Length: 411
Image (cartoon, rainbow, N blue to C red; front, side, top):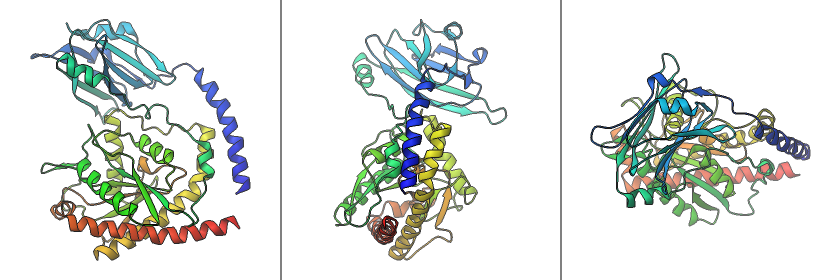
């Protein structure tokens, strides 16, 4: 342990120097704009349509600012000059575009607008045949009052410069002498509804479950809990990890209720992180979750530089083992409480939200909205209480064994 802490300090000091040098580097183009197939034009019944053809998909975000009115697009390392930007504009509303480096690694496009417009939709289409992508944005007419109100909203900045806290790599494990703090992460939110089936949104169902679970945990002597998202707003995957870390969480539990082809998946599954998915369905779910984050404008790249990666790997070895043990206890607790279990209730996949190197993390798939029984269960108060009891029992069983292991390591 002392050797690990010593390595942490060495690597942390080196990374500070490495980061300062990186700030001075010029922008490296990750993606290019195909101006011949891009356009910014007025829509027939008002508003503006934006289509950008990109050499590859990249993270982006979009927001507005007033005084003067403008729409702002940030991209991860996009190569594009101002002259090229002006050449694609065919609009009476948009003019005098500005484009340049926003901060190292990020570029910004500013669209001055002569009338207030708000984002109606924004999505990126991935072209599998050649690896290119197209970004489609629709801006709709609004009044100045609504535009001003929307323009005061602070954009999510956690997606740009995810804070690396080296000291948390050697954080103190719980030893049973204090309540365990659980970060409960309701998936999706805001512009990202998650799965939508029969008028029900995944983001609403998992938030309701997470709120109830937090209250149930807080009533025990062994646990306390907080939510990474306590309302209907978007939260990036890396931002969720950052929130858990800033809250000094001992555990991160991410909650989802996704959608797969009916008859293909049902029941509760507990996931841990792994580069190799347990099966095709697990790989598809991880891809869906990460893709929804990308399309909502979030940087999904692991921003570890080579040296930082080594440092993080030192912590992940221990954390991943603890996560596996946590998943096993949760599976057992839920099965005992519900008297039901899937044939393979514990799986693994490359879920970004589970990649915190210093916090044991699991993702609980509460069911699949494409399965009628699962949807009925999620809407049933009694079923949710039973599952929450199983989760708490699993946490209790895990915490006892985890504390015993921590005490042995200290000796």
